[in-house]
Length: 127
Image (cartoon, rainbow, N blue to C red; front, side):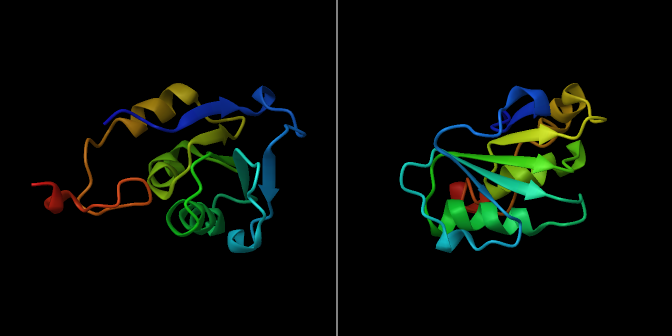
């Protein structure tokens, strides 16, 4: 499976991009005004705090958001597969993480049995 999540280092983005909405990790995405927003930034204050996964899933599946969803903060390459399956399209890696390693991890599995935020049909339903 080709990775659909783009990997970056923090210096690639400015804090005040037009059309970008940054949500606190305790905010409810269902209450956000998404008109004119093309990128939602979700925060991982610690790699053990997974609330942004739920926010991304809500944005994709319940709210039908089709723009970019960017992970920032304490983002590790070990989280990338789940981020991609939750609906993230971009991840800004923590400074000590290697983009090349992240790309290798994202291509490790070619299919998943369960559906996810991006590919909703379970694997067995494709037969």
